[in-house]
Amino acid sequence: MIEQSTIAIIATMLAGMGGGIALVAWTESQGKRTELRENTQPCAECQGETTTVCNVCNGSKQDPLDDSKSCTYCDGKGRIKCFNCAGSGIQPRFLDRLSPDDFMD
Image (tube, rainbow, N blue to C red; front, side, top):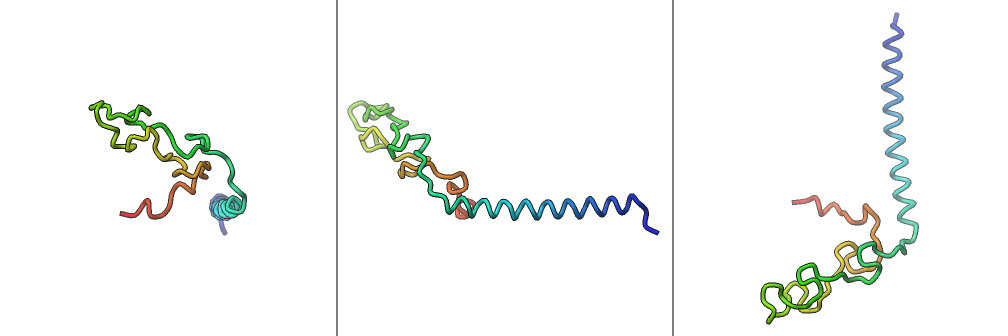
């Protein structure tokens, strides 16, 4: 005869597996719904302008170590392409920022 504690352990294990599978399925369906929805939210870093102030010269366009030369990081423009949105002006969705290639060596 099977003890009641054994039945409880098996039931808990099956419920946990079922819950885990349900969570994975739900996450997948949410990802598909997100892909279908249009993304028009402006970037939080550049406010949709596609560029940000150069973080080396702080927009002065001059090399901070030698004022007679232009900044080599921004090519003397004082602004650089936004790193957050890659210059698109649209706020990327969290998972859109990463690709499998980012994790490959």
